[in-house]
Amino acid sequence: MKAAFYKGRKRPFNRLTAWWLRGPYSHCELILGTDAAGLSICASSSMMDGGVRIKHMKLDPENWDVIEVGGDADALCNSAWAWISEHDGQGYDYLGLLGFVARVLGHDKQRWVCSEAVAAMLGMQDSWRFDPCSLYAALSRACGQQHQAI
Image (cartoon, rainbow, N blue to C red; front, side, top):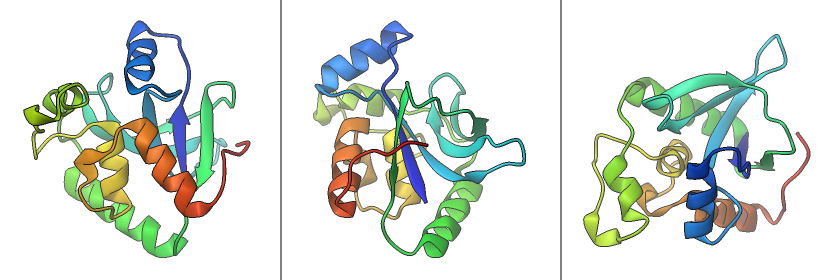
């Protein structure tokens, strides 16, 4: 299983988020597989898409860093699909996004930011604590690797 981290700067929100987080990433996705057309089957929570969803995407290496997620791939995949089936359609956590600025604001337990959703799909405790940059650091350190080509 792989995770993808968006480093593109197309939209002002992406530039501002990466700047605020002091890192290259503003969004992340969990890659659940590949479809017949060669697109990545991605799961996350997206502000643009209204919350938790699955989306088939072309992950251009110019804009995305992809890392392998360690652990039992089958178990992780089953866990991720189970999480998605339970949370699909839940909203985007704007309060949690503000929590990147001031953690005291907390988060909405029925809504998700991208990194929180990906961490939860991977079974990580306190998934609300992760932003895209800290999740990348945690996963790449745990796997002892840097990003790879798609």
